Image 1 (cartoon, rainbow, N blue to C red):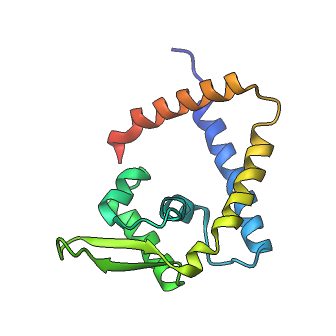
Image 2: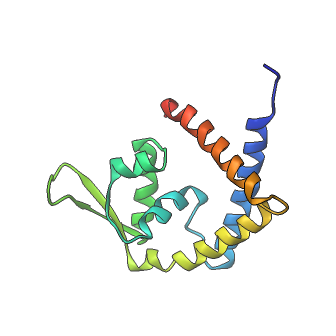
Length: 144
């Protein structure tokens, strides 16, 4: 197989995207949110509560990583944790009002990221790229 720079390109995209996210959050007055918090917050913007294990599964992160991210979000008042009514061993998380206030800011950042990264792509190209990246992500899922 020919040596490809796919992972290097993905790393550069992530680095540049994270800079845009961090700068946009800071410009909006949020210095306590990192790009790594985005998947959790986006999941919780629906208003639904989730078990921590389900969050880890949905965002393709390990349970210890999610625990660390959730702790910071909770300390800063963006989410709350509580025991499941069905099973006290299960820790649930939900977004707070302060967390919901981030939703329009995240939408604006997402729009800007989409505009910058998807410029000059056709819809067919974007659909195909998304399919390929999803497939690549699923291939790596077992490495969590």
